[in-house]
Length: 143
View 1 (cartoon, rainbow, N blue to C red):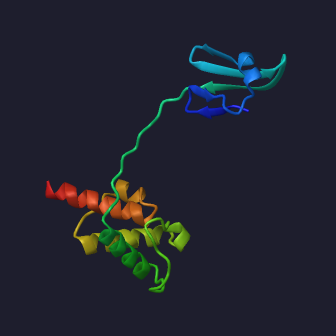
View 2: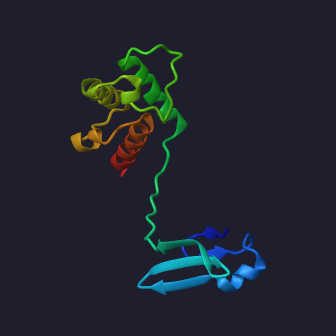
View 3: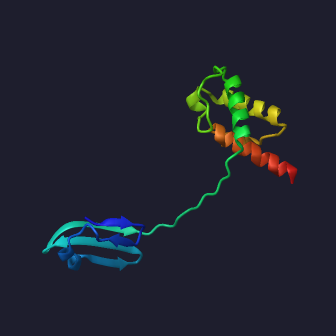
């Protein structure tokens, strides 16, 4: 078998040396085809298409901000203090409906002295989303 590394190279370490001569690699309009055969019998064939890579950069909120958000979420949803609420916690998984989410956002606005626009509020799905948005708004307000 061959091992694929990235979108354009193949490692032939696991292919027996006598099969190296039977490796066919062709490129037509950005599509790469690879066919491996052993003495004329095709044993593996597939195509690869190069795709653009999207890079997303995000800054994680400070741990204290995440913890404050966790506390507010617990309070708004009447969850026990020892309930597992982390940055990865999704509001829906914690039992929040749309009204609960609005109340959480209102609690966050009050606690942090900020105003969250409706469009931004609708994009909040997790505690981490909320903490990141809070820090973004606070930073924007400082500027």
